[in-house]
Image (cartoon, rainbow, N blue to C red):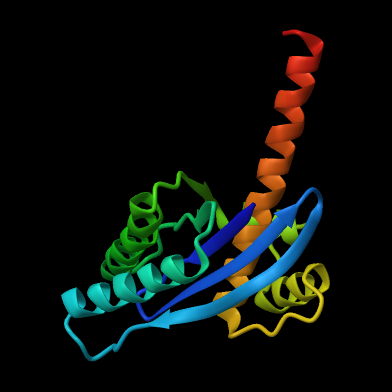
Length: 169
């Protein structure tokens, strides 16, 4: 199974792709879709959409996951981030994929083991789980962490459904 994780952002939208085979994870690619902060919002969203669509066309993931956002004190920034998140949800949906959504603390807990890990800890643990990976930046590291979180979630869900079927429930 090929999983893409997406870390939504209006300026930098991180993406990371891993292959999952049983409990084995391997790095495929990662990067950051960037938009011009001086451009109109509509142009920025179109740019992010085009770049992310190209990633999907190139790597053809089987599953997708996006980090959920939380409301911060700046309502305008939260709204803009929500619009970028819409792109992060739209592109996988257009590819026919259901999208897993995870809170930042859930991603951190799945990858680092604690829900309040910092960026350096996330980067370090992603590198441990994907040996030899060259990470394109903090947003790409977060996206790879989201993909890893989704892979763990899918594996756990698969184990649960197999156990239920085996028990005849």
